[in-house]
Amino acid sequence: MADKRPRQGGPRQGASEQRIGIFHRLQAWLANHQLVAVETLIKLLQKPTATILTWLVVAIALTLPGALWMTVDNVQQLGGQLQQSGRLSVYLQPGSDLNEGRQLAQQVGSWPQVASSDYISAEQALAEFQASTGLGGALELLPENPLPAVILVEPPLGVAPAQLQALRLKLEQQPLVDEVQLDMRWVQRLLALLQLGERLIWVLGCLLALAIVLVVGNTVRLSIAAREDEIRVIKLVGGTNAYVRRPFLYLGVWIGLVGGLMCWLLLVLCWWLLSGPVAELSQLYGSAFELQPLSAGAALILLAAAVLMAWLGAWWSVSRHLHHIEPQA
Amino acid sequence: MSAQDPMVRFERVSKRYPGGRDALSGINFELGRGEFAFLTGHSGAGKSTLLKLMMLMDRPTRGRVMVDGEDLSQLRPSQVPYLRRKVGVVFQNHQLLFDRTVYDNVALPLQIAGFSPAQAARRVRAALDSVGLLGKEGRTPIELSGGEQQRVGIARAVVNKPPLLLADEPTGNLDPELSAEIMNLFVRFQQVGVTVLIATHDIALIERMGHRRLILDHGQLVAGGSAVEDDIYGG
Ligand SMILES: Nc1ncnc2c1ncn2[C@@H]1O[C@H](COP(=O)(O)OP(=O)(O)OP(=O)(O)O)[C@@H](O)[C@H]1O
Ligand SMILES: [Mg+2]
Image 1 (tube, rainbow over the protein chains, first blue to last red):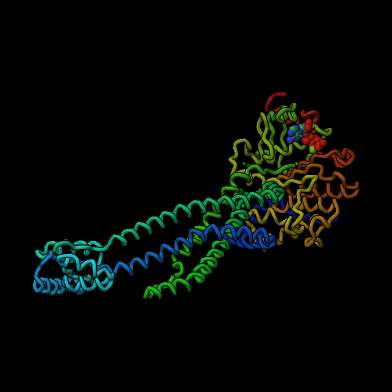
Image 2: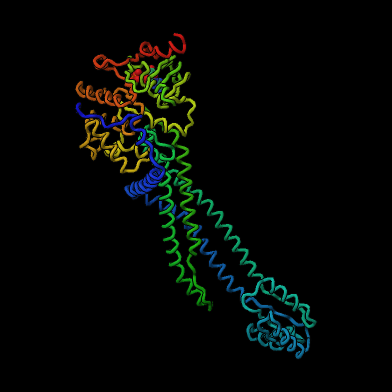
């Protein structure tokens, strides 16, 4: 080999070749990202057991808040349906005239904010009460009918709670009216429960996001330890911090991405397991309610959160451990 | 960074490792662009330490190290990789990646510097050709002899055409014939403009080749470094 001419140019000789155009740089940078992404995935798949376990941990950590989210979404929807059937019971003053009562019922029925109104006389009310409770005998002992006449007022579908309150005030101002009952309390309780559920999603979500950061951080720490020699050599030949970090950040992204997709699968499985029983239940209640899967928007948010948290975990781990690893002679 | 600046310049450089005596003390010397020099001295004299300072693998306790006109103590951490790209290094323990092929090992500095695979391919083949390993790109370093591994390390050190080439005992453990071959290789790099500094114990070889010699003794430069001392500090 002594007669071979060196092909290596010196610094001056190679100066023009040394400069690389910005376009080529960008191209090479993209090519490097692509290469690192693929290489990192291949390395992950070469250790299937550890990798699948990590993915499952991330998936399960996400499935908990995801399932809660799905539940709250569904209850909200159910609440909306039930709220539409809210109605008002207008109790008339005791001993009020039958005809006046009928007239008021008709008048109220013609208001635009009322869908229908139904007059139930004191006698009818007593009869219904006796029939439904079987307590007729006890009531017969009373000197007179204790029940007032009632007008049942049905607001149109989908009326807002504020409008319902206004209607109630207007009804209370009618001279014949004794009391108006708007049965909204259970709706308010449901809303409070839903708020609690939303809060719970946040708390659980934040805790489990932290868990993802820690799990990925630890996985990346182990990977850094296993590749210490490689990192030293890369730094020795002029690898920037960004270059050294890159494979570990991709490691985090892959864990988050696949973990997030597996979480989707788990949520679909939950939905599929629950939708049968829920449909049966709602049929028994005469409702057409069906359990809905998580919306596409929510599913994307879950996936994005998984990738972001895993990336953060990787970044945290890399910035903690990488600068300790310096080239050695 | 002008062309008049020497490639390497040490100004009263001392290095003390924690808890030890001075590994280097008051080192002054310059290495001109395109110069070829040997660095010798007994074991523990401070040769490796001196080379490490030029790569920022360590920092001097006192004094100033300049490479290519840049004061290394002034470099921000983000600039260190770019200094290392200008300095090719060959260590006795090769520092090769054993899970990658010879080709990938040599291509690493180019990949890091942002060469496209196609651009890199030409240079990697040229570098492997210059060390006589053209047929072995696809092997892993484990499948090579010690001398071949050493030559892979040299190919990797020069593939990015660095203006400065440092070698620490590049011929240790090699037979005389192979040692001579590798030294010839370094001479050919110098002939195309590369500044070369080689730390070695191989006195016989040094004497046969007859280049400038920097001699370290217990951390002091006892020969070959007079230029700076005389010019700047008046002896
Ligand atoms: N990391 C370190 N920590 C403490 N002391 C060190 C370290 N590295 C080197 N030394 C000491 O510094 C002195 C110079 O070491 P250096 O490795 O530079 O010598 P050398 O000339 O390269 O020797 P050799 O020919 O045996 O390789 C020695 O006394 C050594 O013990
Ligand atoms: Mg040494």
